Image (cartoon, rainbow, N blue to C red):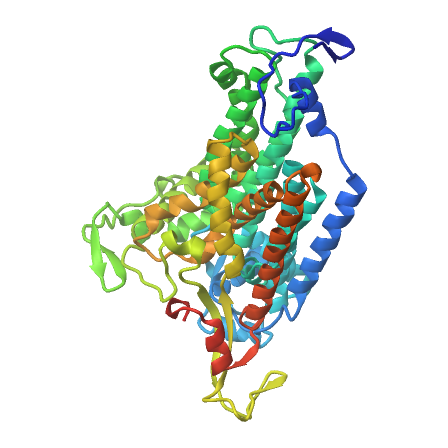
Length: 576
């Protein structure tokens, strides 16, 4: 069989059945055909209209009573104030006792000290929160609105990613609906915490990598007019990789936990690139791709991400002298590697109390030398923060701490707000506790994923592993690597307080696995009876997720419940 490539006749490079290849006897498309079909748009208008519709619905859901409860929920007590401080002073300042109540009373002056606060997470997420406070003010709506936007955008990005992976607008929308009705994503979209931003930037970065995979193969197909010789074409400029690098920088600039996914997907980019070269006839493509693709990818991803990360500390660098003056000789600087627990506090046993950052004893420099000096101070600050994370939490405990081994099955949700002991007949907000409530009523906001989605997601992930490893379907690898890289590293830190909501970064990839699995279950349009049965099963699952979410709605939204109604939603003792 002779194929036309760029108008010229060529024999097919390979008749090997590829990933996603037809199983009904149809001819297997060659590398050129696959590359060009992947880059082509299908139903662009319909796809975008459906995406916007689901995203808008999700956003409206997350705006509902966004400002309630009117209090600092969980770690909002840190991030909301840090964001306001960044916005008005350029760096995070410490605050006076009782600052929370003063803010809730409408006071925003006289609550910050002149000394810097030692923040233990980077600043991008707090700058995002600050944007909401800039527009809506220093109140719960102001510090939560950016999270609501990020939560809705996370759903939009997921729809587009699954649509690209599956070639189906319907499956993309199914994925969006599933994430829209997840309780963990929903509640985090209504809190001024950092993790929703990490999830958004990480998924967006991966989406750009998948787009680059299509773009890169199409680029090779355009440059080649026959089987490749030698190393194949050099492709030094890859715009989707550059965009991904920018997003990885923002993700790491929100929390360092994004470093492992960057490394994992960086390796995947190399393997994808090598596979592309091999499909066009390059021999020994894997080692050759290390040079031909690995080095350019390193600059696009790692170097760009590093630049964005450092730039995100611009406020810190502009006030480096303040940090050197106040934080260059803390207990973390003095720590020499030895300590013990004193209750819940880690105490150094042989601190070097004379130790300071080297820049603290140097004269101030200007120009390029001054920039270098400030960057060195930032490095020493990072070293102290790393010491805090790796040592000074070793003895700490927390009511809602949990082991990562149980996160995917919802072993321990996190309560972020509660108002208990509301007496029968008492008015709470705009509702009244029923007179027959026994013994009382309560309100709660619980960071709990929708059980039907998460438990079904475990099955979806197991299926994804099989499809990736056994069937060699690269699309399922996106889901597997995404979950593994964002979840497994936490096992290294399970001896200190960590929380189940950290798994929000893994959740979109779990939904990717579910959506692709649903596509496999339904089968192609010509599958007849299988398609009918598969559609019925998939539809039942989606409905179950939505109904499950609706059942937990009151404990996602601070709703008023009798004690009995609350117990009906607390299915396990570990959920209390």
